[in-house]
Amino acid sequence: MEALGKICVYVVLMIISVFTDGYTLSKGWEWFVSDTFGVMQLGMMQAVGLATLLKHATTRLRSSDLDKADTDTMETTLKLFFVGQVINVFFLVIGFIIKSCI
Image (cartoon, rainbow, N blue to C red; front, top):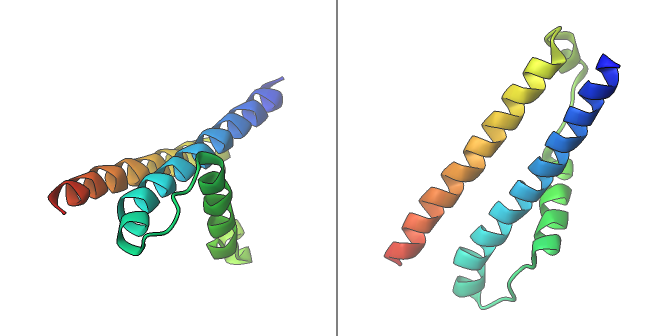
């Protein structure tokens, strides 16, 4: 039963992460790319798809990473999730400040 709970937590965190990455990309695109280059804005689902594609294309897992893996994968997953969300918030805050000054 504990394994099922961990799987549910992983799935929920992945879904939240995908949508927050997409939202962050859509706002950055709206603030900087659309206005600067006069291109169409990204919808939320387009941004989610593009963010997922970019993350898939740029993430590489090496066997040495697996050797260094913590024994507590839930703790590691929560740390990585938290860091990703902090990076998204940081980008949105800095992007908003820059956009306000332009």
